[in-house]
Length: 169
Ligand code: FEO
Image (cartoon, rainbow, N blue to C red; front, side):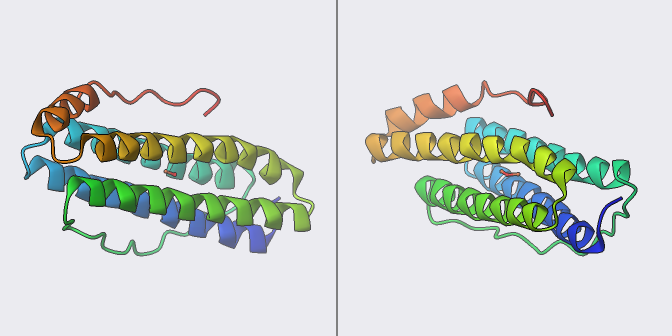
């Protein structure tokens, strides 16, 4: 049985993951309207990953006999100054999500909730990858600078990304 304090925190995380999905979908839409369909594809896959994260928490709360209580999702930004600006916001957001996951781990330890702690370890690892992915693209964008050909190549590369449910998810 899930303690009320943990249930509340996990419900907040469901909200944070759906917000992440919403934000990446907004970024995807922004790329579509800026003729960068490869970047748009990458962000759409990111949106799918975030919904997968949300549903992983959702299923876990139910599996533990808890109650899922959905709340309103904040509106995401809809405008960015540049491609690099989008990925800076992405990296910053993933760092914020990592901090949220680490707080959940701390709470599970405090409550001696071993099952939640175990489930969260998957997210601890996933966040390392999430931050690394954003950082890698950001580094490439910094290398490309103002070179249109570089942006064209990266756009083509990012069009190849597909969503596959992560292992162990
Ligand atoms: Fe669900 Fe990108 O963290």
